[in-house]
Image (cartoon, rainbow, N blue to C red):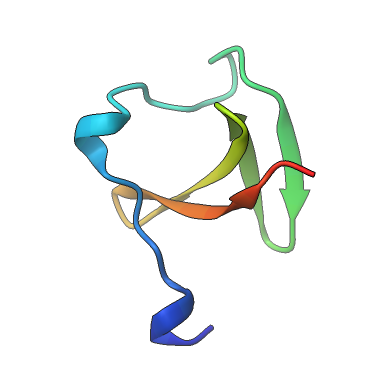
Length: 56
């Protein structure tokens, strides 16, 4: 992954913590899980969430 591909999600816009029972749909994405949230995908990464694109 290149530095330009790393897009942290603004934490002030997303106080929710995703997890096993958070209520959001999940999608397997390589070696991790993306959480579907407000029309886009979030993935946990080193204490924050990254944007992983819009939901198709």
